Length: 159
Image (tube, rainbow, N blue to C red; front, side):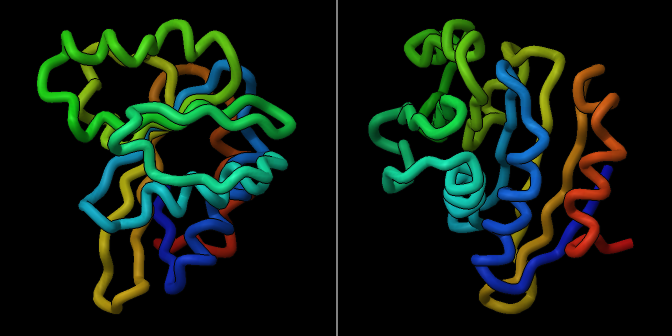
């Protein structure tokens, strides 16, 4: 596990932007954290780094948003998914075929997610804007890029 700390929402976006440079078509990033922890802010920084000019908003009610920059970004929200059967509405296998997919509250879907993904847990810190980000690579794709991930987030890394 790799741990980072940020002290401003723009820093959380910057961490996401650093990671955005490492993704490949078909990648899955699972975002987990308390309500208001910064999952959508993370996605905003990620999308901006991949040349998305549209306003990135939480897909809580739409379930999925799609943005096009220099790569397609699928932004899903599984907060309202109470049963795995409901996840079929998200068309996850099809989305993973095109671009990068970020899923907020993705831990609700863990049993049906591919074994190759980056999990990002965002936790509230002591100060209003303090965040702790924990990264876990699952599967061979992120294992091969782990050193690059460490280098990309070195400015925010904590022991």
